[in-house]
Amino acid sequence: MANTSAPNGFLQYNATGVTPTFEQTQAAISSSSTVPVFFGDPVVQAASATGIGTGYITQGYYPVALTVSGIVVTNGTAVATFTAVTTNVPTSPNAWAPPVGSIIYFTGTSFATGGGINQGYTVTASTTTTATFSVPGAFSSTFTFGTCTIYVPVAGIFAGCKYLSIGQKRTVWSNYYQGSDSNTSQQVTAYVISSPQSQFNVQTANSNTAATAVGFANIGQNIGWNYGATNGNVANGLSTAYADQYTIAANPYLPFRIIGLLNYTPDGSNPLQGVNGNDYTTAYNRIIVGWNNAMFNQLAGV
Picture 1: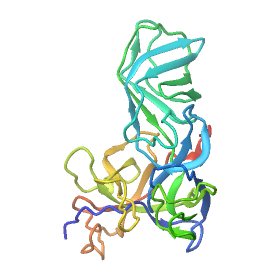
Picture 2: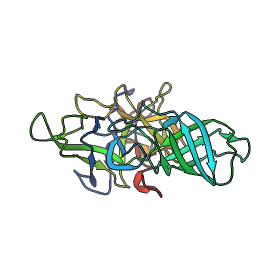
Picture 3: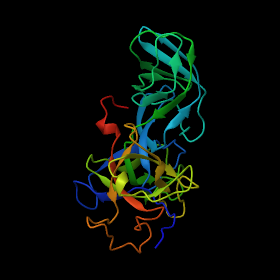
Picture 4: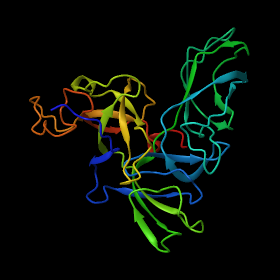
């Protein structure tokens, strides 16, 4: 049976804890945030307009491409200037800046003198239009620019929340935070699956071209995610996130690693192959992923 596209986020598959919590941890969403977060969404730590973590979480976003206009290197400290980003990033309660501790990754960039800086660096300071990082050696200010991408490590998978509802005048338990209705005198309590051993069941799709099956040969590779037509389903509170086949690569900064195919057995069969997502020979099949680049595994915190 061919699969159909019906992504519903990252669903708990295995962990070192026990049901129903699976070693969930509590986090907070700012009650002033207007960014919804859905059950099964990857989440990241929210940052201020100077890149410093606020302690809150927000809906995760996939790698951010920057349009860089200049890079100045002084005594090993580089400052990249870029056009402010306002799409596909959280802009509430403040404008987006690359979070301190995220990775800024360059490819195809070269300087007139001093070589190139084509690799990943940890962001040590930022604003909405600049990112600071350390590089070895001396470089000229004349450069040929390739591409620049910000990778923000995932803090966990969202598993619901509770908050004091303005409309209902009581504490509400919900699959998702709708980005409103929360009493501003109290923060939103979020539940996040962040155990280092967690594994997730997620449907695959392709954000760039026609999807094909993610197969046995892809096990061990890293993968990112994307969202469906909307960043969540308000009818049921479930995520529309899917594992993005287009991102599969040996990129160390991608958030997830492919561990297996859902219900795939060692003899190459699948007893549930007639269930949507279980046909591992066609597009939109489901895979099992674990953490690769997660916030709690970083040498530098966000």
